[in-house]
Image (tube, rainbow, N blue to C red; front, side, top):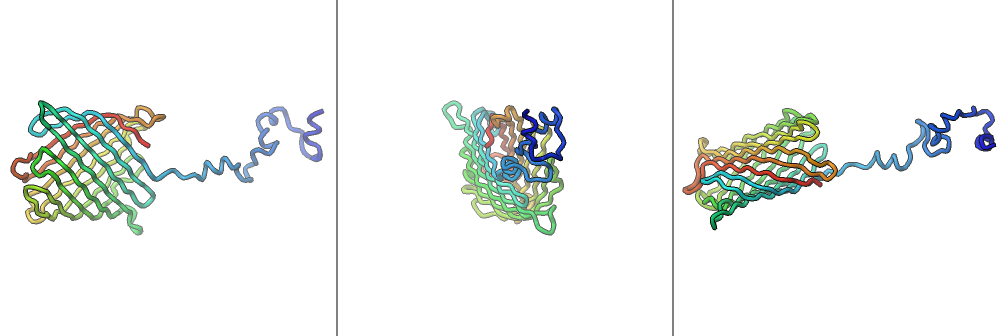
Length: 268
């Protein structure tokens, strides 16, 4: 007696089978329309909600450094970035502290910020501006400020591999030692490689030559490997190597400094 009541007023319609009642029930009662009708409000909301352009990370762990001595200590890092289809802005902070035998062995921090924007008529090219400020208690220069701007070329821009080559001009200034503003050229690269769903490798490097004395230069290289350990909690293990080389250090400063850091980071 129930079927005639359900389909009353539609005498020409075919009587549905039991299987159609089960699998096509939403269509019958009007919850979900056919392919030519509009999606439900829930589906429309899911389709139109854009992902946030902002990403942030925070991490902490152990550090290993090699300057004049080999020491162990702690490290802290954080970053936030904004990405859209045409531009990217990223700011990061790294801090390393080592204390041993009643003496500070390492007290180093650097904050960096960069902005990149694609050129409208040449989408493989972009312009960039970047700046950094670092503090190093155990080195004579104490603080070092740098700023650069220039052009970059995207050698690869696939979902798995992004590679940027860049060049430009700028300047650096140390607080102590040679405290003059030194005009510099910059040649560098950045790589972001998603090795697989869980492992990502990123690297940045640059050589910054003194324009007045081109044989004198600063080199900064950084390599970071991140392994996702919990997607649900946005947790990952990281291993980072940073190397700074000064071809003409001030009296008392190191030629080369290497920091190895590792720990756990949280993304949000």
